[in-house]
Every structure is written in C-alpha cells, then in structure tokens.
Image (cartoon, rainbow, N blue to C red):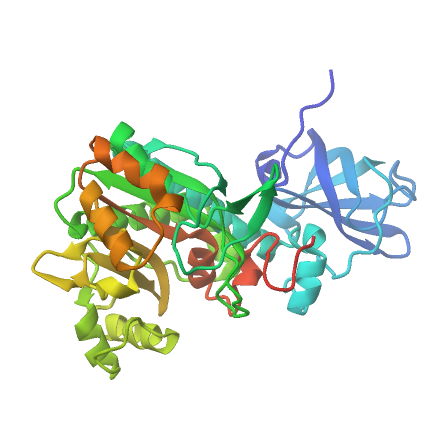
Length: 430
C-alpha cells in the first residue's frame, strides 16, 4: 500500500525518523557543490527537502514549477519550515519539466507589472500572496452562504441569457440566440424578485455582465455578484439589517477560514459595527459639499464619506439611503412620505460603493405606471411585470460585488489584481 500523502503544513506534526510522502510543485531549487535545497509547495504551504550527493534524488530534481512527488525521511531541523525537513529523498516528476515561469514565484513579494500578472494568470496566481487574495474571496463566499442559510434563505440560480435588459439605460452584451437577439444578464434582479413569491427569501452567487465602457480601476465587464432578496418586509431598513449581518458573516468567515491569508497579506480585516452608520442622501451631499441637485455620489464623494464614517464613528462602513427616485432603477420603491426620494441605499466600504440595494415595487399597477412614466416599452418587461399580478409580497434586496469586496479588503489599487481572469474593455484572455 502506498504511503499516505502528507501536506506541507502537516509536516510539523510528523515524528522525526518517520517516512513521508509529499506532492506539490518545485517552488525553489538551490544547487550547491554537494547539496540541493528543494522547497516543495502545495496548497497548504511549503516544505524543505535536502538532497545530498548520493541520495536517490541526486540529479533528478526537475525545474521550478514542475509538479513532483517526494518520498523521504522526516528529519528535525530548526531552520526548516515547521522545524522538520525531508532527507534521503526520492523525487519523481509528475509531468513534463516546467518552462521557466514569467516571474520568480519563490520570492516573498511579487513585483511584476499588472499586465504581466494578468497575461500569465494561470501561473502568477500560484504565488502565495496572489493565492491569499482568492482565499479571502473563498472564505467570504462561505460566510455569505452560511449566514443566509442560517436565516432561512434558499440558494437559487437564474438564467444568464435573457430577453431584455435588467436595467434600462445600462449597456448590455447582445448575442445571437438561435436567430433572434438575446442578452447576457446584467443581474439576476428580475428572477430573484419573482422567486420571493416562491421561497420568500433567496440568494444567488453568479456572474453578471455589464457592457459599460468603463476603463477604470474599479469596473469590470464581468464580475461575481452576491445577490439577496427577502420578502414580507416593511421597509428598506430591514434589508439594511440583513446586509449588516451578511457582511459580518463574511468577515467572521475570513477570520475563521483564511487567517493565514490575512497574515500573509498583512491586512487589517474590518470590524462590522452592530449598527452601521446611516446617512440620508441629501445629508451626504451637504456633508461632502456637493450641490443639492446631484443625482448620485461621485467616487470623490464616496471617499469623503468613508473618511467621515471612520473619523466620526470609527467605522469602515457607512450606508447612504434615500437616493432620488428618478436616478435609481425603475423597480425601486419611492418613499411614501416624499416620493422624490426612494427607499434605496448604497453601502460604502472604505470609501468605495460596495453594495446597492432597495425595497422594490411589488404591485402590478405600480410597475405599469412607472414604465409609462419613464417611457419604457412594456413588451420587453412583460413576462417579468405580469408576475406581479399573482401575489408578490413586499420585498427588497441587495447585491455585493465579490471582486470589489476583496479589492477593498486588501486595499488593492486596481480591482483586476484580485480578479482571477478579469474581463474589461481590452481583455478577453486568458
């Protein structure tokens, strides 16, 4: 029977003198006169192998980044990772010798230009610092799902090929769908709303597509959206409370499941307050010195509000509610006391808009009226709007951009640095 595989992180628990079998990549290979120091990397960390002249592995260590299997004897060495290294080792390549990687992955830092990182993403994501960024994303996804599952939500998945734009005015990717036009979905908005009529509380994790010609450090043409919708609410404040709990669950999962990634990156994970500070949009405009008739917040305004929230409340988060109804999506619910303002909101995290949300319209007649007021043709929205004739309860929801969340978590200057394979105006590969 083959010796059971030991992961690099578990090597520290092996008793010296015991046989060990590792599998991973050649992370670094240093050749001396009669000695080779081999560092093996697997998904859990690094391990050191010492190959001496005359050992079975002498002359058999392949180039860096070649996948290998190493069998040897655990030997105590205080200088080795975890205090244990392998000696008297046999090395077997598990593939062809790897070509020289475009960057030196064994170096502690990854000092490569962004185009190099993106052009060679299949390799550069192997660097421990790059891996750590997606480990934060994976942990956040776990926390997102776990929090909502505990709250009685049902995970759903909606079509990504749709017959009409979700948000009129935003650019969409048109595709040929068996001879007729269709579009890549901008969001699962319509579907999660109607599924509230089935499950009451739903969420989805999936890609969304925006053909908006933004060439900025915070926009992508495709990103992962974490969507939530909950029914039987009285106002958007219940949605904000749900959002707060979800973000707190994501942060808790980062601590629990990605502590080593946090340490590697040297980042500060935010504390989520029991109640996130809330500002009305009109007050936010005055606070940042913007004109009263501004329809939205500019990035500079968001940064100023983020600084205000930290200085005044010690919070990395601030909610801005009550955006002008005319500037929000047509399905946003107006404030009954003053319909000029909507029951919509944004969550600003470290000076950048992270989340948009709102209470939605839920009556058929309201949809017919608002489509007519905004000059939208009824036909493209018919299958969606007709569902509100059959009993959709008061509801609301929000969406979190995963890549934007991670980029602010690590305070990356460009969202592409935390995106596995970004799609933007210029990039369609790898």
